[in-house]
Image (cartoon, rainbow, N blue to C red; front, side, top):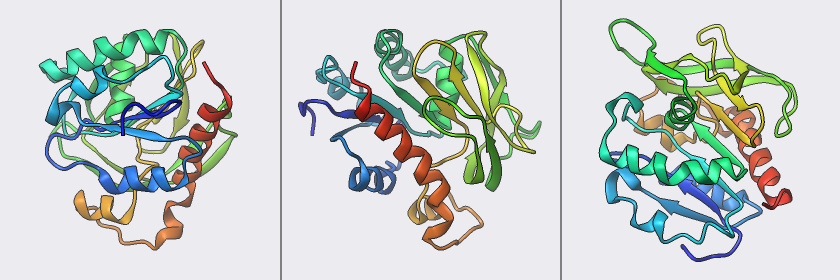
Length: 223
């Protein structure tokens, strides 16, 4: 799929099981073509082959990895990504992507619970208005054992919940947003992560609307 002009670059940092169902859901509704990359599993070659001069945005999915591991693929991905962030490429980080962006700009990530167990299920998230999203409140799926505990000085908290104080961030000057929950979640995602929920498809509507609004932002704001 690489080589398409004007694509949104989807980065899936999965270590074992790619989030293909989430990618396919995005591909069915996106106003722009998407390209798909698995740096943790297959390295950086496909990303380095992308013509980023024509890219319209980046979405970074979740991962079982921790940003604190500082694995070679993480260092390479961050080094590759930073120039594109700095030049104003619209970017959305989800779960691991949220933590990675916070870390890259000087934030700190640590465990949610002292015993390192996961925060699983869903929670109500309150969103502040940004240039990408309106003020809103809704249910989002979650599966994570780490969280951002110190926000970067150049980022603002835009999403909160009763469970997590920093559930979303926005950069103060660049078109960068991030969410700790999984707005891209599907039924396949719940089964893959063994979440204790089996809702119908309407339960994903709030999250899907958030992702669709980012894709529409990327489509209407060329670099």
